[in-house]
Length: 119
Ligand SMILES: [Zn+2]
Image (tube, rainbow, N blue to C red; front, side):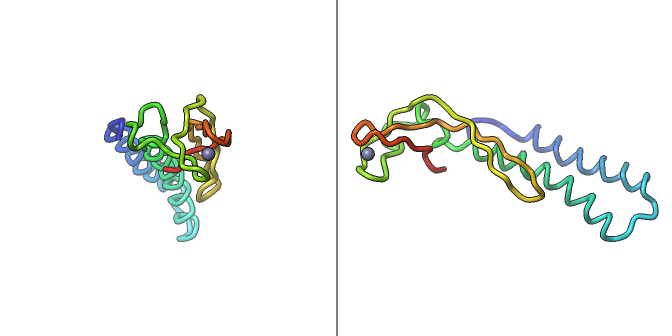
């Protein structure tokens, strides 16, 4: 991992705990389903954020940072991809949360195809 997420991830879970306590005090007559939904919404936000952080920590997320032997190759011809800047991708995950991933974009020097490396 290129980053230490301990502090940020602890903050996310602390927000869930304090937010849930607050919500419960404001909704003393909430049903089981309502409590479940309030909890799921909060976990979904933290989950999406952790997913984003963990995905961006992958070495493959940045071609330039990767060592030569682990640099991604073209799935068609096997040539080592050349970095061509970064592009942002948006992925939807549980509870309509959007994860934004800034990934290196690679171009094959042999066949000219462009790829987002997996990982
Ligand atoms: Zn190729």
